[in-house]
Length: 238
Image (cartoon, rainbow, N blue to C red):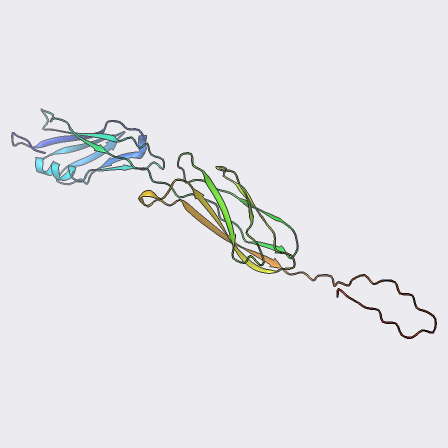
């Protein structure tokens, strides 16, 4: 920034000429040297009579920020003009390239579960499943069990990109103890630029033992002749 006539600069204007994400797009500077800034709807206004070098110092702190979780990636054109109160400078133009990050998918916490040994299949609801607010993506949900002897990996009932689903879990026959189930939600947005495309939740499944009924195999009928010796009847399946 220069003033060829050597006088002060009274104002400057920075404009995003193609504002595509509305209020999510913000221009800002660090005020100094008697210069103050205000921003509204893609236009950053600098005010205050100060030297050209002071304005240059402030403009060198100019930042563009886009708060949208799914920003429009069209490049933005930013223009800058300065005025001494009588004349306005030529327009300086810069281009801002927008890269969209893949937001981390979400799933709500899952409560710990307690079931009885040999009690059958338990349905566990899954809620709050999202891709983090990005555009259309494929979401997958998978599970794993820390103790497959007790509990095999639960079955997932889920259709992308629903916000809810169901786990179907059941302990193996005659087993009891504790297993930790990990539920993983992944989208297909990738990990470019440090993005995270996966999130996990864990919960415990406690299988409480029950007293099983004792077993004895069926015993065949026995025919004994009068005055015969002692007969042995075999018992099995005990």
